[in-house]
Amino acid sequence: MIVVMRSGAPEIEISRITQELSTWGLHAERIVGKHKVVIGLVGDTAHYDPLQIQEFSPWIEQVLRVEKPFKRVSREYRHGEASDVAVPTPNGVVHFSEHHPVVLVAGPCSVENEAMIVETAKRVKAAGAHFLRGGAYKPRTSPYAFQGHGESALELLAAARQATGLGIITEVMDTADLDKVAAVADVVQVGARNMQNFSLLKRVGLQSKPVLLKRGMSATIEDWLMAAEYILAGGNPNVILCERGIRTFDRQYARNTLDLAAIPVLRSLTHLPIMVDPSHGTGRAEYVPAMATAAIAAGADSLMIEVHPNPAKAMSDGPQSLTPEQFDDLAQTMAVVGKAVGRWPQVTTAVA
Image (cartoon, rainbow, N blue to C red; front, side):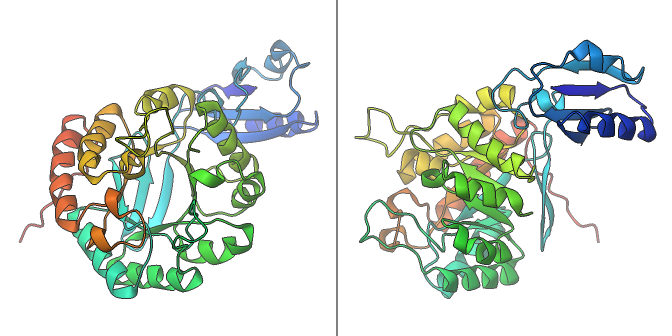
């Protein structure tokens, strides 16, 4: 249930209503929008009459029930307004939102060594990336596959950030590693295999770093949004959703099926920003450019693309990784589409 305050409602009245509703055994959350304040009510609201709450104050415009099973994640909960996940980085604050330019995230699947990760970071930054992705801890289907270098790889990611000023996105797999990962990462990633690791979701919801939540390989959109609800319920409102392909009946020609239809569906259901990962979504480097540009045209707020200096020798996911040169070319193509839909960063030229 949400209580929509009238434009210009005084602070003292908003506080009074929030406190009164809290005494009913409900958790009242204030959501400040561009023009109005909304009070979100979480708890057992079924037996409360919206008209009863409406009578609290003439400053209440309307009281609405949120019909979806996901509450805080629902677009209704913010009265239709989109979230803006603002992430501080050494190069400045980067905004993940439908009202801001597309954010580019690029880098290798796994951090292999310092020279490789620093050089890759420099190349993707030069092409326009805002964040470096790289796995320190890697969930793999086979127990014999490369699992990542762990804590030492986090130090290499920190070195890459220092060298380039890029923000860092890296995955946490275990609650025991969360503090170490969050100390380095600007955005903490929960991967597809952990999308319904509810203990992990609760823990990342209790910490303050923004969270990138990847869709599970067999997850419905409602499953995915309910997983995000765990994080918001823990107190962390800064969640970015990442579509990375789902498993369907045809796996002969592509690793997964990239669900681009999820972008407009999510836009109608949730206020959270939307990222697309065409690298995992296809599993084939030659398909990544088409899906990346299509994602921008469909309304994605961010793209995550795997880039490796030598994909043939990559320790993980080489077949889906672009070379730095291929990423340079793709960035130029994405700029054309991004500008056409009004979602590309404006390049400013210094005047002598």
